[in-house]
Amino acid sequence: MSSLNNPFAALSNQGLPAGPEIPAPKPVKLGRVILRKETAHRGGKTVIVVHDFASHITGKQIDDFATKLKKACGCGGTVKDRQIEIQGDQPGKIRALLETEGFQVAGVK
Image 1 (cartoon, rainbow, N blue to C red):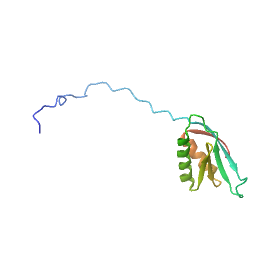
Image 2: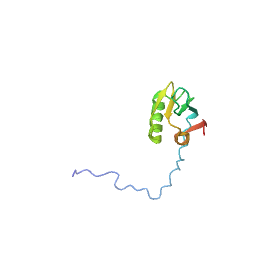
Image 3: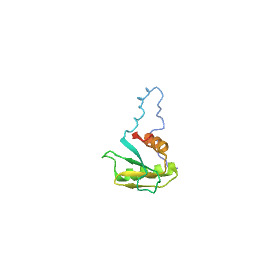
Image 4: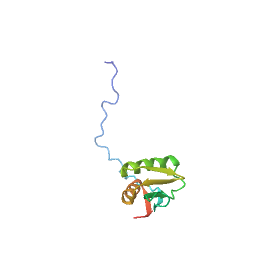
């Protein structure tokens, strides 16, 4: 042990007024996206396309959203030209995840 005294040992917060309440952070609004169901040129298979991302959303963020969607739906998918293509007919799961991320979702229900 050192022979130095702790200069803050005698301090106490008793009798001090309570600090200001910090408001909860507002949910982030990422903008509006549109869901579209496609089967053309896919051998009869259904694909849900998420498109029309706002310009402030980066390609990396779109890739991250695609990864989350693929994991949530348990299926494959890809990102092409700022559009996410998710294999299968699962618009409900896709819509729910995008809304929890902060998007306003339009299109296929």
